[in-house]
Amino acid sequence: MVAFLRDLEKTARQNDSWLCVGLDPDGTVDDVFDFNQRIISATLDLVCCFKVNTAFYEARGPSGLDALIKTVEYIKEFVRVPVIVDAKRADVAHSSKAHAKYVYEIVGGDAVTVSPYMGLDAIEPFIERRNKGVFILCKTSNAGAAEIQNLSCAEPLFQVVARKALEWNLHGNLGIVAGATQGSELKTVRGIVGEGIPLLIPGVGSQGGNLQAAVTSGMNSQGRMGIIAVSRDVIFAPSPHKMATAFRNEINAFRGDIETPTA
Image (tube, rainbow, N blue to C red; front, side):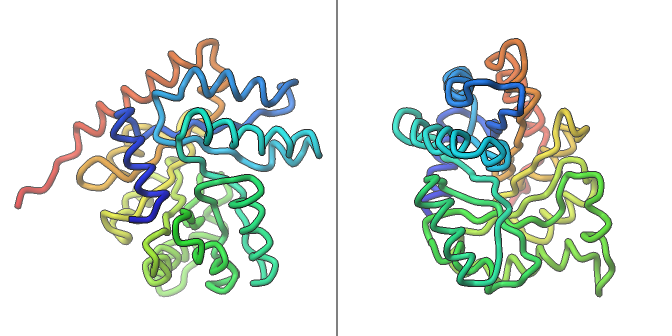
């Protein structure tokens, strides 16, 4: 099994959790690394992984990039929980090689989000890192997603992307980004990709996604492989620990409602 998926499932079992906390410090945060340390300490036993959106760090310039690298190093050394680098990268092949080096070697991520819209050669440098995870943007959680992702081909474009991901998953390290705000379309994506491919599911909480629908539509039939990503609602809560606990427990309650097929 790919190292990222092995570590993801191990952490999910240990913490009984498919919650991913997004470490996305906005402009109100002064000391980013200190802020992240406090969130990590408060939630480390409640998550299956952490996610860092590079935009919040890159916007701060060199100090932000330093905080990003220190944050991931801290997680890997002291917490040992997988880290998804939400960078949404992909470019012509030689540029993507540089992007892959950045997210995997400089930042130190275990997985990355990528855009599929330049085709396979643009994301191959990420996929070739066989022990790393690669989450392909498919049906995103933003309000304008349908403008492009619902364009009609033989079927809606996001469904074409999901099927392409199956073709490209030669090393077993691909995942899909499918937003909790997308309702029945999340269920459609799960139906296309099957049981074994992880879905990264943003959009619960501040973006308005329904948690129950995200769990029952995005998990596989065993109540696994659906990574529910929550950022602002946890990290800016008066008690991040209490909020993460509430999300983890609610996710697990809805996982219990998923019917496992009988043989």
